[in-house]
Each structure stands twice: as C-alpha cells, then as structure tokens.
Image 1: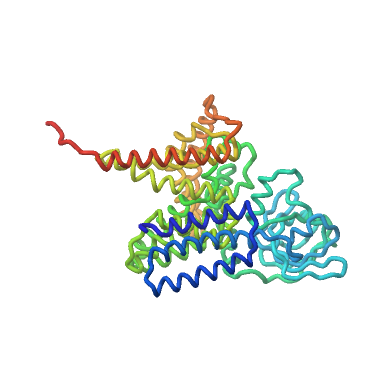
Image 2 (image 1 turned 30 degrees about the vertical axis):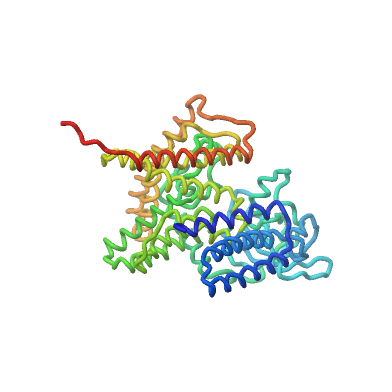
Length: 505
C-alpha cells in the first residue's frame, strides 16, 4: 500500500455513508469488531500479511458505521432534541462560544448541562442550542465560559422546513434555539467556566478585531474580518451576495490558504528575525496554528488545513518525509473519527475536495512546460482551475448553479487575498506596539481590499457568467468524478511517455 491512509479513509467514509442509509445495532457491530481484532492478532502470529490488510479495511469500515450510528443517536432521554417544542423548561449550561452582539440581540452557542422540567431533573444533556437574547434583557456582559440558568420555550432551529439548514446545524451538534426576552428568564450563575485555552484564544480574537476596527473603514474591515476569521455576520447581504454570485465566496471562509499564509509568515519571522533554530521555529509555528484554529472556532476547513500543516511541520522535526495527499487524508480521517457528521458539512466538503484537486492537478500543470516562468503561471492558474474543477459537481448538486467567471477571477483574487492576510496580521502585530504604525499597514490593506472589491464588482457585471442546472443528482456527481479521474490519468500517462526533443538552433 503506497498510501495506506488514503485507502483507510476511503473505506471509513464508505462506512459512514452506508450508515446514514441503514440502521445496524451498535452491539452487533461491536461484537463483529472484536471478532475482527481477534483474527488480526492470529494473522500477526501466522504472518498472514494480505489477510491482515483485508481485516484492517473491514475493521475501519465497521468503525465508520458504528461511530456514525453513535453520533446520530438522539433517542435517549438526555438528548436536547427531545425537548424541542417544550415550554417553560429550565436549562442550566455554559456559554460555548464568543457571543455575537448585533443591533437588537446577542446570540451565542449554549451547551446545556441539565434540564428541569415539571420538577424532573435530567442530567448529562447531549447536544447544543443557540441563545438569542434581547439586548435590553441583561445589564451584564455575556461572554464565553459563563454558566447560565434560563427558562424558555426551546424552538426548532429554523422556522422554515429547510432540511439543508437543519442538516448544517445538526453537523455542528446544534438542535434548537432559545429566545430570551425577559430578564427574569435568565440568570448568571457563575463566571469562570469553560476551557482556559479557548478563553485565551477569544481574548486574542477580540484584540485582533479591535486592530481591524481601529485601522480600517467599512466595508473593508468587515471583508478583512471575513477573510481572517471566516466571520461574514457583520457584512451586508449585498456584499455577501456579490462574492457568492462571482464564485469567490470561499475567500470569506477561513481555509488552507489562510493557514498556509499565516504559517509561512510566522515561520519566516521566527527563523529570520528572531534567529530561532529550525526545530524550535516549527514547534512555535505549530502552537500558532493551534491558536488560529481555536480563534476561528475550530471550523472543519481550518481543522483540516491545520492538521495537514501540522503533519508537514512535524515530519522534519523527526527527520521524516511527508506526502501531501497522505497528510490531507490523515487530517480528514482524524476529523471524521472525532465527529463523523462532519462528512455532511459543506465547509468540510468544499475545503477537502478543493485541496485534493490542487494537490493532484497543480503538479501535472507544472510538468506541462520546462520553462520556469511558465511553471509559475501554471501554478497560479492551476490552483484556481483545480479547485474549480473539483468542487464544480458539489456546487451544482447543492446550489444548482455555478459561476464561470470565477475561473478567471480566482486567478486574480487569490494573490490579492495573500497580500491582505499578510498585511492583516502585520497590522495586528504592530497594533500591539504602536497604533500609528498599524495605521500605515492598515491603510495599505484598505487599498488592496478596494482593488479586490473593484475586480469583484466588474466580474459581477459580466453577462451570462452564471450557469443554472435544474437537476444534478448524486449519479451525475459520481459520473463526473469518474470522467475527471480518467482524464487526469490520461494526461499523466502522456506526460510520463513524453520525449523532449532537442531544440533546433
């Protein structure tokens, strides 16, 4: 097995997909898994390598089925979904993220610990809910880690029968919403709860947002907030729609590009400015990546990119070579073992598939020419083309439309995003030293963001740039990837057999 992690991840994913269509007893799955482990031990002593490999695949297939079954079990009385629609229930729990303060209300993620309903107390509650609190209801500052007692009607996560929205929230383990309009319905029980590291990360995030607010004007500061933190909530609906229609909404969702640029920036700073040894530079960069993942609320795309970057940095520390595709699948496997429902998260799907496309196609594009300048052009354009080709069927399946102009626009926008990210973090570092220095880099960033907005606005006016397809089901997605894989293998075969003739002078 050249890349065993790839094979194991695919088998595990097949198990998850099968488990989402059928229901199998977890007890029977556990018994079968124990039987497989016993056979593996026998194969080890008998040195039956081929059979052991087959058994490992079967084991991961069973684990995929079992973990998804366990992750989606909501029938137990201590799962929060069973109390959706109930009135006047008392919920005690902890604020689980950094609350968002809007014009009229404060919204936050809430992790219930116990529920009191008609003098009956249910502990060890599973699942999470959203809090929506009227701003005039509380006269104290709501923040991460506070333990609250609330009395509410627990409503469904969406008023409309939109299964895609529900599926999105369910993949994040969110099952209901509690709206608080009366100060008698909410009480602060204690202040210091939650994870200490997450608390620190939210403090850093607040400081970063302060640096953006101080050095940039709207709408540029909202766009930078979206690029650095994946937070589109402060952006106007028109601006978000503009990015969506031109096919570059992905730049407002933190991804591998952000993680890669931040890692490169910090690694260069530690090695060249602070003169740390390579090993210490890698270790410190790993810490920064972990903090960035926490700041961006452990989004699937960031987790995938962070785990992948971590494996790239850890390998040289222990004098090991690293394979990018293997690292990508390892990151996916770790995420899916931690939460199998992430497989159905759109952010995870787009992030993983786009990155896979880049890792597969860009090296092929670079091999099409022997000239250095053409290789650079192929790399820049190849990133955009690869990501677009690989996510095309997923976009058509979920949204039934795709932007053609995005293919060209991404080639122009991605380098600008790189500059914006670098200037954003340099501004943040300078902000903690001198606000005046931060204003200089902030002004430069404002100029770059305005150039990017201008390009997006021009692209949005191009006629017939959006293709709409009314029906695009799973069969079409499957056929598309088979044809794409066949084309890639064909081109690779041509490159492998190509004979470069000497130039005639």
